[in-house]
Image (cartoon, rainbow, N blue to C red; front, side, top):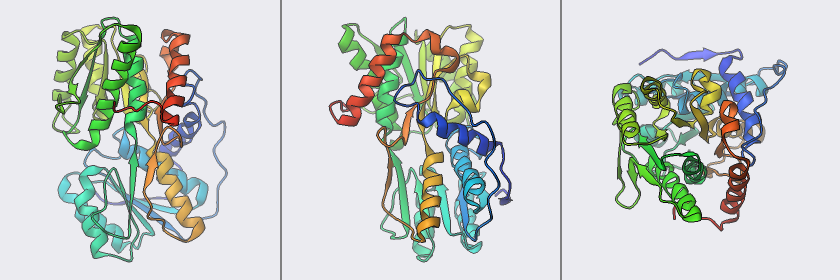
Length: 362
């Protein structure tokens, strides 16, 4: 178990989250260029409120979902004056002890990051009914003091699939997952059905490697940290003709970027969870866009609501295209490669998903 670190000053993570908030407004028009805040927010007075979080074993610097939650904490510290504590789990054995450390620290809100913590956070919530817990990508087993945070990732993934099919020259695209857990299936299925929507619209078949939504079989690394397997899967999909790949595998997108680079391929990839071209600019040249799960927004909003109302709201937070909880990032360096007609169609599809006339899961 890694030592808990109390953070009391704005860090680079907060700067990234501030930029991400600006980009959230670009979801309906992904062709809009990214902007960043011009100046740091002024210092705010510290308040008597402690917001805490426990990561999974992918670490706070995963450039993905853990880092996005940490960004939300840092933003709450900078803008609301709350005190924050973040515990990094090195293995799954750390989940329970880290959550207990947060209980012992008398945190006002404790956030467990990721599906893998669902058993540990439910146990902690049952054992400490007076403590407020949040599970991101998890679920409640009946605890009345546990708020669930979920995202309709099939919506933004459908947009990504349509875009992938439109951009692909070979009309072969790929995807793979980290661990084979159900929380990833909406990403991969939405991607598949979005690609097939393009195929139906233009009368040209599109092959999706790595996932079959009917059988729910596909390519999975088996871990969030095994870059070797992630790279091997990426190389195999490139060899099979894929020229667009969507890694639904946290920070393992770096392995896909390396595979593209090493093969000299003109392929591109999608980031996942965070705005990867922004958080990992060294890969911006091959990241067409990212399918964002805006956990920074959710984390900040939950802390802000609890602080300002004095009441912990246990209703499920569901991030959608409609409320900006998910969406595509800007195209950055690759903006010129996306035809204006495709950008227009993406905006139309987004509106149709929000209206309910398109069902992303078929």
